[in-house]
Length: 540
Image (tube, helix red, strand yellow):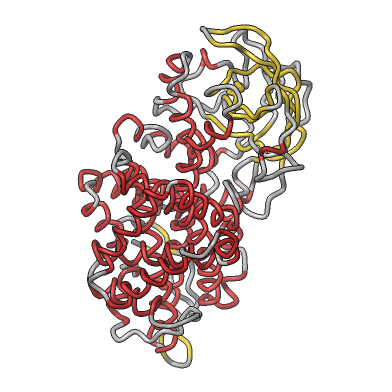
């Protein structure tokens, strides 16, 4: 590992360090969750993600975001969006590790989650097309024409060319669900579908309408929602039609986003776009459900990655910056702040890896409860906590953290997006209540597990009882306190996972700081032995 020379008490960035090797908690997670065999893959990827070239590619891809060229739609050989070369390097690294598809064949979801988490610490925007490609597979694999896509989807070759699928080695799939009048309320969509013919034992359709956010617009296909005879249905819309024509998907403009700038998000117009149905007609919501658990999990992983990188940057800065005659990390109050940040990061990591492990064991009752109830709860909590935590880490840097020379501004701009995409915080909390109401057997299983796991600690037992009492409220009362319910649930899941897997001093510090006081601000808890906790985020 190298870091730039310290001059005049200035600390510049980390470089040529192994993101994985300096993360003891992630190593413990792989060993505890049955993925020890992936340690070497993660070691190699961690070295790549912390190398100077990849760090520079991350900077380039965000400094030079995609640009739209207005062209004649009939010019089938002209790519309408230009990306910096660094964007393709970042995506190629993900494809080479199979992060976009492999786990559906190998069931190695913990390995995939770890690689996703490592990549997200270096560059977040390139994760978006990979997430959507990965999440589309469960929705598509039962279609009669999936066999024509499978070799491309499962290929580890990243192919950025804009041409019909027959001429490509790999592929990506994006999503186009939301419209400007509805947002999360997809039932308000007005895009329409009409029958148009047949293809490989399936009916075909023509789609007409408008999509307000069309993610990764140059993907080889998109999953799109449209009204079919007044019922919301899901459709597979390829960029190129089977006869070699460019499909009727017209890019109107690219969104000028606050963060996630390396990744293109477009506004598009559908004009007689050729499409195949996904799932049964009128069952668009059910088709989406097959995808949202994974996209939401990836939001949790992505936020946990941002959180981890911000904390590592803060601890590194504090370890080399002197203030009032001592290193920042030697100042007692700064130690309390940094300990809180390290614990927040580690709890987010254990939660996201626990959810990935549940996907591997998705046929068990408890894993189904994790997928249906804990996933939206985790998305609400971790994505929201990342915003506060990254801001606190920026403050550790002081004024240097607020300028574009360092990594903190990009991390802070990136942090809010996962709270917004795939359902905002209130949507997640209401979905948790819906799951508890509609699938009570899963709720009972989850609460029973939490009661058993919490039995070893008085504070956790008390918290479980409080949550159970709160859940006895009627539906209207529960909606008012939905955020409180979800916060209590997530903290209990994080605490029990850490009790089960993390070192005892880490779990105990987390429990004491999160359950022994009503209301809290970062750094308000006093840790008896901060040095051991701080070592969890030190880059040696």
